[in-house]
Length: 490
Image (cartoon, rainbow, N blue to C red; front, side, top):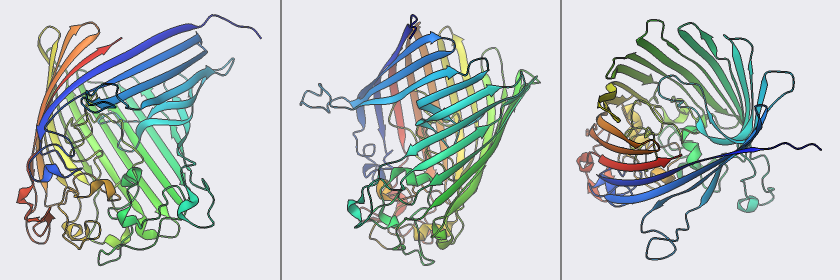
Protein backbone atom coordinates (compact mmCIF):
# COMPACT_ATOMS: atom_id res chain seq x y z
CA UNK A 1 0.00 0.00 0.00
CA UNK A 2 1.09 3.53 -0.61
CA UNK A 3 2.11 5.88 2.20
CA UNK A 4 2.41 9.64 2.50
CA UNK A 5 3.86 12.04 5.02
CA UNK A 6 1.69 12.82 8.03
CA UNK A 7 1.58 16.29 9.55
CA UNK A 8 1.36 16.03 13.34
CA UNK A 9 -0.07 19.00 15.21
CA UNK A 10 0.04 19.15 18.99
CA UNK A 11 -2.20 21.31 21.15
CA UNK A 12 -2.54 21.54 24.88
CA UNK A 13 -3.90 23.40 27.87
CA UNK A 14 -2.70 23.73 31.45
CA UNK A 15 -5.23 25.09 33.95
CA UNK A 16 -4.40 26.08 37.52
CA UNK A 17 -7.45 27.02 39.61
CA UNK A 18 -7.97 28.65 43.01
CA UNK A 19 -11.50 28.80 44.45
CA UNK A 20 -12.85 30.39 47.61
CA UNK A 21 -16.52 30.42 48.49
CA UNK A 22 -19.28 29.40 50.85
CA UNK A 23 -22.71 27.83 50.90
CA UNK A 24 -22.51 26.28 47.47
CA UNK A 25 -23.19 22.77 48.71
CA UNK A 26 -26.56 22.22 47.09
CA UNK A 27 -25.21 18.83 46.04
CA UNK A 28 -23.73 17.96 49.43
CA UNK A 29 -24.11 18.58 53.11
CA UNK A 30 -22.18 21.64 54.15
CA UNK A 31 -23.91 24.24 52.02
CA UNK A 32 -27.17 23.87 53.93
CA UNK A 33 -25.72 25.17 57.18
CA UNK A 34 -23.52 27.88 55.73
CA UNK A 35 -20.04 26.35 55.70
CA UNK A 36 -17.85 25.01 52.96
CA UNK A 37 -18.74 24.08 49.42
CA UNK A 38 -20.46 20.73 49.18
CA UNK A 39 -18.01 18.06 50.31
CA UNK A 40 -15.01 20.39 49.90
CA UNK A 41 -13.36 23.18 51.83
CA UNK A 42 -14.15 26.86 51.52
CA UNK A 43 -10.78 27.25 49.78
CA UNK A 44 -9.59 24.74 47.19
CA UNK A 45 -6.69 24.67 44.72
CA UNK A 46 -6.54 22.36 41.75
CA UNK A 47 -5.33 21.77 38.23
CA UNK A 48 -6.14 20.02 34.97
CA UNK A 49 -4.08 19.21 31.89
CA UNK A 50 -5.43 18.60 28.38
CA UNK A 51 -3.34 17.25 25.50
CA UNK A 52 -4.51 16.96 21.89
CA UNK A 53 -2.70 15.44 18.93
CA UNK A 54 -3.92 15.77 15.34
CA UNK A 55 -2.53 13.54 12.59
CA UNK A 56 -3.30 15.19 9.24
CA UNK A 57 -2.65 13.24 6.06
CA UNK A 58 -4.53 15.69 3.82
CA UNK A 59 -7.63 17.82 3.75
CA UNK A 60 -9.51 14.57 3.07
CA UNK A 61 -8.11 12.47 5.94
CA UNK A 62 -7.10 13.23 9.52
CA UNK A 63 -7.38 11.89 13.04
CA UNK A 64 -7.41 13.30 16.55
CA UNK A 65 -6.74 11.98 20.04
CA UNK A 66 -7.51 14.13 23.09
CA UNK A 67 -6.42 13.24 26.64
CA UNK A 68 -7.43 14.93 29.88
CA UNK A 69 -5.50 14.50 33.14
CA UNK A 70 -7.44 15.50 36.25
CA UNK A 71 -8.89 17.71 37.58
CA UNK A 72 -6.84 17.14 40.64
CA UNK A 73 -7.34 18.96 43.91
CA UNK A 74 -4.04 19.90 45.52
CA UNK A 75 -3.36 17.82 48.60
CA UNK A 76 -5.21 14.75 47.35
CA UNK A 77 -3.03 12.01 45.93
CA UNK A 78 -1.07 8.86 46.47
CA UNK A 79 1.08 10.59 49.09
CA UNK A 80 0.41 13.04 51.88
CA UNK A 81 2.33 15.64 49.89
CA UNK A 82 -0.54 15.96 47.44
CA UNK A 83 1.72 15.05 44.53
CA UNK A 84 1.97 11.85 42.46
CA UNK A 85 -1.75 12.16 41.90
CA UNK A 86 -3.75 9.09 41.03
CA UNK A 87 -6.27 11.20 39.12
CA UNK A 88 -7.50 9.32 36.09
CA UNK A 89 -6.17 9.99 32.62
CA UNK A 90 -9.28 10.26 30.49
CA UNK A 91 -9.53 9.59 26.79
CA UNK A 92 -12.06 12.27 25.93
CA UNK A 93 -11.88 12.15 22.15
CA UNK A 94 -10.41 9.80 19.56
CA UNK A 95 -11.79 9.99 16.03
CA UNK A 96 -10.95 9.98 12.35
CA UNK A 97 -12.22 12.48 9.78
CA UNK A 98 -12.48 11.49 6.14
CA UNK A 99 -14.30 12.55 3.00
CA UNK A 100 -16.05 10.28 0.54
CA UNK A 101 -14.03 10.55 -2.73
CA UNK A 102 -15.40 12.86 -5.38
CA UNK A 103 -18.04 14.25 -3.00
CA UNK A 104 -18.45 16.90 -0.31
CA UNK A 105 -19.62 14.33 2.25
CA UNK A 106 -17.56 14.50 5.47
CA UNK A 107 -17.52 11.59 7.93
CA UNK A 108 -16.32 11.58 11.56
CA UNK A 109 -16.07 8.26 13.41
CA UNK A 110 -15.14 7.66 17.04
CA UNK A 111 -15.24 9.46 20.38
CA UNK A 112 -16.11 13.08 19.61
CA UNK A 113 -17.52 16.25 21.10
CA UNK A 114 -21.18 16.78 20.20
CA UNK A 115 -23.42 19.72 20.97
CA UNK A 116 -26.95 20.04 19.60
CA UNK A 117 -27.75 23.34 17.83
CA UNK A 118 -28.11 26.49 19.93
CA UNK A 119 -27.61 30.22 19.35
CA UNK A 120 -28.25 31.48 22.89
CA UNK A 121 -27.17 29.30 25.81
CA UNK A 122 -25.66 26.17 24.27
CA UNK A 123 -27.87 23.12 24.16
CA UNK A 124 -29.94 22.21 27.22
CA UNK A 125 -30.50 18.71 25.77
CA UNK A 126 -27.08 17.32 24.86
CA UNK A 127 -23.52 18.71 25.02
CA UNK A 128 -20.84 16.17 25.83
CA UNK A 129 -18.16 13.82 24.51
CA UNK A 130 -19.74 10.70 23.10
CA UNK A 131 -19.03 7.72 20.85
CA UNK A 132 -20.66 7.77 17.43
CA UNK A 133 -20.58 8.62 13.76
CA UNK A 134 -21.44 11.97 12.19
CA UNK A 135 -21.92 12.79 8.52
CA UNK A 136 -22.22 16.31 7.14
CA UNK A 137 -22.92 17.54 3.63
CA UNK A 138 -23.08 21.03 2.17
CA UNK A 139 -25.60 21.24 -0.63
CA UNK A 140 -24.84 24.87 -1.48
CA UNK A 141 -23.98 28.14 0.25
CA UNK A 142 -27.40 28.22 1.90
CA UNK A 143 -28.24 24.65 2.88
CA UNK A 144 -26.28 21.90 4.60
CA UNK A 145 -27.16 18.89 6.73
CA UNK A 146 -25.62 16.84 9.53
CA UNK A 147 -26.72 13.36 10.61
CA UNK A 148 -25.40 11.53 13.67
CA UNK A 149 -25.64 8.16 15.32
CA UNK A 150 -24.59 8.36 18.98
CA UNK A 151 -24.14 5.57 21.52
CA UNK A 152 -23.82 7.12 25.00
CA UNK A 153 -24.57 3.86 26.89
CA UNK A 154 -24.01 0.18 26.15
CA UNK A 155 -22.65 -2.95 27.87
CA UNK A 156 -22.75 -1.46 31.37
CA UNK A 157 -25.41 -3.71 32.90
CA UNK A 158 -24.33 -6.45 35.30
CA UNK A 159 -26.71 -9.37 35.63
CA UNK A 160 -25.35 -10.24 39.08
CA UNK A 161 -28.16 -8.06 40.42
CA UNK A 162 -30.79 -10.37 38.91
CA UNK A 163 -30.98 -14.13 38.64
CA UNK A 164 -31.19 -15.44 35.13
CA UNK A 165 -30.47 -12.14 33.34
CA UNK A 166 -27.50 -11.91 31.00
CA UNK A 167 -24.69 -9.36 31.36
CA UNK A 168 -24.86 -6.37 29.02
CA UNK A 169 -28.17 -7.55 27.56
CA UNK A 170 -30.38 -4.85 25.99
CA UNK A 171 -28.69 -2.05 27.93
CA UNK A 172 -27.93 0.33 25.09
CA UNK A 173 -29.13 3.85 24.45
CA UNK A 174 -28.82 4.84 20.78
CA UNK A 175 -29.58 8.36 19.59
CA UNK A 176 -30.11 9.53 16.01
CA UNK A 177 -29.84 13.22 15.14
CA UNK A 178 -30.60 15.25 12.04
CA UNK A 179 -29.97 18.98 11.78
CA UNK A 180 -30.35 21.20 8.71
CA UNK A 181 -28.48 24.53 9.04
CA UNK A 182 -29.90 27.20 6.73
CA UNK A 183 -27.72 30.24 6.09
CA UNK A 184 -28.88 33.37 4.30
CA UNK A 185 -27.75 36.96 4.22
CA UNK A 186 -28.10 38.14 7.80
CA UNK A 187 -30.18 35.14 8.91
CA UNK A 188 -29.24 31.69 10.22
CA UNK A 189 -31.86 29.08 11.14
CA UNK A 190 -31.27 25.47 12.19
CA UNK A 191 -34.16 23.03 12.61
CA UNK A 192 -33.12 19.77 14.25
CA UNK A 193 -34.52 16.57 15.71
CA UNK A 194 -33.26 13.65 17.77
CA UNK A 195 -34.73 10.21 18.52
CA UNK A 196 -33.31 7.88 21.17
CA UNK A 197 -34.10 4.20 21.71
CA UNK A 198 -33.51 3.07 25.30
CA UNK A 199 -33.06 -0.60 26.18
CA UNK A 200 -34.82 -2.09 29.23
CA UNK A 201 -31.54 -2.65 31.09
CA UNK A 202 -29.87 0.67 30.24
CA UNK A 203 -30.63 2.23 33.61
CA UNK A 204 -31.76 -0.85 35.49
CA UNK A 205 -30.74 -1.16 39.13
CA UNK A 206 -31.46 -3.43 42.05
CA UNK A 207 -32.80 -0.38 43.90
CA UNK A 208 -36.26 1.05 43.41
CA UNK A 209 -36.19 4.24 41.40
CA UNK A 210 -36.74 6.48 44.39
CA UNK A 211 -33.30 5.62 45.74
CA UNK A 212 -31.34 5.20 42.52
CA UNK A 213 -28.01 6.95 42.10
CA UNK A 214 -27.62 6.98 38.32
CA UNK A 215 -26.44 10.48 37.36
CA UNK A 216 -27.75 10.47 33.80
CA UNK A 217 -31.26 9.60 34.93
CA UNK A 218 -31.52 13.13 36.30
CA UNK A 219 -32.43 14.47 32.88
CA UNK A 220 -34.56 11.56 31.71
CA UNK A 221 -36.82 10.72 34.67
CA UNK A 222 -39.15 12.58 37.04
CA UNK A 223 -37.93 13.72 40.45
CA UNK A 224 -38.22 10.76 42.80
CA UNK A 225 -38.78 8.31 39.96
CA UNK A 226 -42.09 6.46 39.73
CA UNK A 227 -44.48 7.56 42.46
CA UNK A 228 -48.05 7.03 43.56
CA UNK A 229 -50.52 9.88 43.99
CA UNK A 230 -49.70 10.21 47.68
CA UNK A 231 -46.00 10.67 46.83
CA UNK A 232 -44.89 7.24 47.97
CA UNK A 233 -42.30 5.53 45.77
CA UNK A 234 -43.34 2.80 43.40
CA UNK A 235 -41.58 -0.51 44.00
CA UNK A 236 -41.50 -1.25 40.29
CA UNK A 237 -38.01 -1.26 38.79
CA UNK A 238 -37.13 0.44 35.53
CA UNK A 239 -36.95 -2.53 33.20
CA UNK A 240 -38.98 -1.55 30.14
CA UNK A 241 -38.15 -0.13 26.74
CA UNK A 242 -38.10 3.63 26.39
CA UNK A 243 -38.52 6.03 23.50
CA UNK A 244 -37.27 9.62 23.56
CA UNK A 245 -37.74 12.42 21.07
CA UNK A 246 -36.53 16.00 20.88
CA UNK A 247 -37.06 18.74 18.30
CA UNK A 248 -35.84 22.29 18.11
CA UNK A 249 -35.69 25.43 16.03
CA UNK A 250 -32.84 27.80 16.74
CA UNK A 251 -31.41 30.76 14.88
CA UNK A 252 -30.15 34.33 14.79
CA UNK A 253 -30.78 37.52 12.82
CA UNK A 254 -27.88 39.92 12.16
CA UNK A 255 -29.47 41.82 9.28
CA UNK A 256 -29.59 44.99 11.34
CA UNK A 257 -25.96 44.77 12.46
CA UNK A 258 -24.74 45.80 15.04
CA UNK A 259 -28.10 44.59 16.44
CA UNK A 260 -28.42 40.82 16.92
CA UNK A 261 -31.44 38.67 17.82
CA UNK A 262 -30.99 34.98 18.72
CA UNK A 263 -33.42 32.35 19.94
CA UNK A 264 -33.75 28.67 20.88
CA UNK A 265 -37.01 26.73 21.05
CA UNK A 266 -36.86 23.08 22.15
CA UNK A 267 -39.32 20.31 23.01
CA UNK A 268 -38.60 16.82 24.30
CA UNK A 269 -40.37 13.74 25.63
CA UNK A 270 -39.45 10.35 27.10
CA UNK A 271 -41.97 7.53 27.41
CA UNK A 272 -41.59 4.07 28.96
CA UNK A 273 -43.64 1.16 27.69
CA UNK A 274 -44.55 -0.48 31.01
CA UNK A 275 -44.50 2.45 33.43
CA UNK A 276 -46.16 5.70 32.36
CA UNK A 277 -45.41 7.20 35.77
CA UNK A 278 -41.83 7.60 34.55
CA UNK A 279 -42.77 9.57 31.43
CA UNK A 280 -41.32 13.03 31.08
CA UNK A 281 -42.01 15.76 28.51
CA UNK A 282 -41.72 19.54 28.31
CA UNK A 283 -40.30 22.52 26.48
CA UNK A 284 -37.77 25.32 26.88
CA UNK A 285 -37.41 28.59 24.96
CA UNK A 286 -34.85 31.39 25.25
CA UNK A 287 -34.43 34.77 23.57
CA UNK A 288 -31.44 37.11 23.35
CA UNK A 289 -31.08 40.72 22.17
CA UNK A 290 -27.58 42.19 21.70
CA UNK A 291 -26.13 45.45 20.42
CA UNK A 292 -22.43 45.62 19.57
CA UNK A 293 -20.57 48.77 20.58
CA UNK A 294 -16.90 49.61 20.20
CA UNK A 295 -16.23 49.00 23.89
CA UNK A 296 -18.84 46.39 24.83
CA UNK A 297 -21.77 44.20 23.77
CA UNK A 298 -24.84 45.01 25.92
CA UNK A 299 -27.49 42.29 25.98
CA UNK A 300 -30.94 41.50 27.32
CA UNK A 301 -32.25 37.94 27.49
CA UNK A 302 -34.81 35.65 29.01
CA UNK A 303 -35.97 32.05 29.11
CA UNK A 304 -38.99 30.01 30.15
CA UNK A 305 -39.41 26.28 30.64
CA UNK A 306 -42.40 24.13 31.47
CA UNK A 307 -42.50 22.71 34.99
CA UNK A 308 -43.99 19.83 36.96
CA UNK A 309 -47.70 19.92 37.79
CA UNK A 310 -49.16 18.89 41.18
CA UNK A 311 -49.57 15.20 40.38
CA UNK A 312 -46.50 13.00 41.10
CA UNK A 313 -48.13 9.94 39.56
CA UNK A 314 -48.33 11.27 35.99
CA UNK A 315 -44.62 11.67 35.36
CA UNK A 316 -42.83 14.98 34.81
CA UNK A 317 -43.70 18.04 32.74
CA UNK A 318 -40.09 19.28 32.53
CA UNK A 319 -38.08 18.99 29.31
CA UNK A 320 -35.81 15.93 29.46
CA UNK A 321 -32.12 15.89 28.57
CA UNK A 322 -29.42 13.26 28.08
CA UNK A 323 -26.37 15.24 29.23
CA UNK A 324 -25.44 18.90 29.57
CA UNK A 325 -22.18 18.02 31.30
CA UNK A 326 -20.00 20.11 28.97
CA UNK A 327 -22.44 22.93 28.24
CA UNK A 328 -21.09 26.43 28.86
CA UNK A 329 -24.33 28.28 29.56
CA UNK A 330 -23.94 31.73 28.04
CA UNK A 331 -26.41 33.31 30.48
CA UNK A 332 -24.95 32.13 33.79
CA UNK A 333 -21.46 31.11 34.96
CA UNK A 334 -22.34 30.13 38.55
CA UNK A 335 -26.02 29.32 39.00
CA UNK A 336 -26.01 27.26 35.81
CA UNK A 337 -23.25 25.18 34.23
CA UNK A 338 -21.63 28.10 32.45
CA UNK A 339 -17.94 28.57 33.31
CA UNK A 340 -16.05 28.73 29.99
CA UNK A 341 -12.91 27.31 31.61
CA UNK A 342 -12.60 24.47 34.09
CA UNK A 343 -13.48 24.84 37.73
CA UNK A 344 -15.77 22.70 39.85
CA UNK A 345 -17.98 25.41 41.32
CA UNK A 346 -20.68 25.94 38.75
CA UNK A 347 -24.17 24.62 38.19
CA UNK A 348 -25.06 25.48 41.80
CA UNK A 349 -28.77 25.70 41.00
CA UNK A 350 -28.98 23.43 37.98
CA UNK A 351 -27.00 21.97 35.08
CA UNK A 352 -29.94 22.66 32.79
CA UNK A 353 -32.75 25.20 32.74
CA UNK A 354 -35.64 22.74 32.89
CA UNK A 355 -38.29 23.79 35.37
CA UNK A 356 -37.09 27.40 35.57
CA UNK A 357 -37.69 30.83 34.06
CA UNK A 358 -35.53 33.92 34.13
CA UNK A 359 -34.60 37.32 32.77
CA UNK A 360 -31.18 38.86 32.65
CA UNK A 361 -28.93 41.65 31.43
CA UNK A 362 -25.22 41.69 30.71
CA UNK A 363 -22.35 43.82 29.49
CA UNK A 364 -20.12 41.48 27.55
CA UNK A 365 -16.44 41.99 26.64
CA UNK A 366 -16.12 45.44 28.17
CA UNK A 367 -12.67 46.73 27.24
CA UNK A 368 -11.06 50.01 28.27
CA UNK A 369 -7.56 48.66 28.84
CA UNK A 370 -5.60 46.74 26.23
CA UNK A 371 -5.75 42.94 26.68
CA UNK A 372 -8.21 43.22 29.57
CA UNK A 373 -11.90 42.28 29.14
CA UNK A 374 -14.80 42.27 31.60
CA UNK A 375 -18.27 40.71 31.52
CA UNK A 376 -20.90 41.74 34.06
CA UNK A 377 -24.25 39.95 34.26
CA UNK A 378 -27.37 40.04 36.42
CA UNK A 379 -30.03 37.30 36.42
CA UNK A 380 -33.37 37.02 38.19
CA UNK A 381 -34.87 33.56 38.00
CA UNK A 382 -37.66 31.46 39.45
CA UNK A 383 -39.18 28.02 39.27
CA UNK A 384 -42.06 26.77 37.15
CA UNK A 385 -42.70 23.61 39.19
CA UNK A 386 -45.86 23.32 41.28
CA UNK A 387 -45.48 24.15 44.97
CA UNK A 388 -47.55 21.05 45.73
CA UNK A 389 -44.71 18.89 44.39
CA UNK A 390 -42.50 20.03 47.26
CA UNK A 391 -44.26 17.80 49.76
CA UNK A 392 -43.68 14.77 47.53
CA UNK A 393 -39.92 15.26 47.38
CA UNK A 394 -38.70 13.11 50.22
CA UNK A 395 -35.33 12.15 51.58
CA UNK A 396 -34.44 8.52 50.97
CA UNK A 397 -36.33 6.48 53.54
CA UNK A 398 -37.97 9.58 54.92
CA UNK A 399 -41.45 11.02 54.88
CA UNK A 400 -42.93 13.88 52.85
CA UNK A 401 -41.48 17.31 53.69
CA UNK A 402 -38.37 15.70 55.16
CA UNK A 403 -36.06 17.25 52.59
CA UNK A 404 -35.01 20.81 51.87
CA UNK A 405 -35.45 22.28 48.41
CA UNK A 406 -31.78 22.02 47.52
CA UNK A 407 -31.87 18.23 47.40
CA UNK A 408 -30.46 16.95 50.68
CA UNK A 409 -29.62 13.68 48.95
CA UNK A 410 -29.04 14.94 45.43
CA UNK A 411 -26.49 12.34 44.26
CA UNK A 412 -28.91 9.55 45.22
CA UNK A 413 -32.17 11.22 44.21
CA UNK A 414 -33.17 10.26 40.70
CA UNK A 415 -34.31 13.17 38.57
CA UNK A 416 -33.09 15.77 41.07
CA UNK A 417 -31.22 18.90 40.09
CA UNK A 418 -29.24 20.62 42.86
CA UNK A 419 -32.10 23.07 43.47
CA UNK A 420 -35.71 22.14 42.76
CA UNK A 421 -37.40 25.52 42.30
CA UNK A 422 -41.15 25.88 42.65
CA UNK A 423 -43.32 28.80 41.54
CA UNK A 424 -42.89 30.17 45.07
CA UNK A 425 -39.08 30.24 44.89
CA UNK A 426 -36.75 32.73 43.21
CA UNK A 427 -33.08 33.72 43.08
CA UNK A 428 -30.94 36.65 42.01
CA UNK A 429 -27.49 36.02 40.55
CA UNK A 430 -24.81 38.65 39.96
CA UNK A 431 -21.45 37.83 38.44
CA UNK A 432 -18.33 39.54 37.12
CA UNK A 433 -15.78 37.84 34.90
CA UNK A 434 -12.40 39.40 34.07
CA UNK A 435 -9.97 38.04 31.48
CA UNK A 436 -6.41 39.34 31.12
CA UNK A 437 -4.37 38.25 28.08
CA UNK A 438 -0.91 38.50 29.63
CA UNK A 439 0.86 36.71 26.78
CA UNK A 440 -0.28 35.31 23.46
CA UNK A 441 -0.77 31.86 25.00
CA UNK A 442 -1.42 32.81 28.63
CA UNK A 443 -4.67 34.09 30.14
CA UNK A 444 -5.65 34.95 33.70
CA UNK A 445 -9.31 34.73 34.68
CA UNK A 446 -10.77 36.29 37.80
CA UNK A 447 -14.45 35.82 38.54
CA UNK A 448 -16.80 36.52 41.40
CA UNK A 449 -20.44 35.47 41.68
CA UNK A 450 -23.18 35.65 44.32
CA UNK A 451 -26.66 34.12 44.42
CA UNK A 452 -29.40 35.47 46.69
CA UNK A 453 -32.15 32.89 47.19
CA UNK A 454 -35.73 33.46 48.31
CA UNK A 455 -37.44 30.18 49.11
CA UNK A 456 -41.07 29.70 50.06
CA UNK A 457 -40.90 29.08 53.83
CA UNK A 458 -44.61 28.39 54.23
CA UNK A 459 -45.57 25.05 55.72
CA UNK A 460 -47.15 23.87 52.48
CA UNK A 461 -43.83 24.20 50.61
CA UNK A 462 -40.44 24.08 52.37
CA UNK A 463 -41.34 25.29 55.86
CA UNK A 464 -41.59 21.80 57.33
CA UNK A 465 -38.24 20.67 55.97
CA UNK A 466 -35.63 19.09 58.18
CA UNK A 467 -31.97 19.93 57.56
CA UNK A 468 -29.62 17.65 59.47
CA UNK A 469 -32.06 17.75 62.36
CA UNK A 470 -32.44 21.55 62.22
CA UNK A 471 -36.02 22.58 61.52
CA UNK A 472 -36.76 25.49 59.25
CA UNK A 473 -35.50 26.25 55.75
CA UNK A 474 -34.12 29.61 56.91
CA UNK A 475 -30.89 27.71 57.55
CA UNK A 476 -30.20 27.69 53.81
CA UNK A 477 -27.51 30.29 53.13
CA UNK A 478 -26.79 32.25 49.94
CA UNK A 479 -23.94 30.73 47.91
CA UNK A 480 -21.02 32.81 46.62
CA UNK A 481 -17.63 32.09 45.11
CA UNK A 482 -14.54 33.79 43.73
CA UNK A 483 -12.26 32.05 41.29
CA UNK A 484 -8.74 32.76 40.02
CA UNK A 485 -7.60 30.67 37.06
CA UNK A 486 -4.33 30.62 35.11
CA UNK A 487 -4.59 29.07 31.65
CA UNK A 488 -1.64 28.29 29.40
CA UNK A 489 -2.66 27.01 26.01
CA UNK A 490 -0.74 26.32 22.80
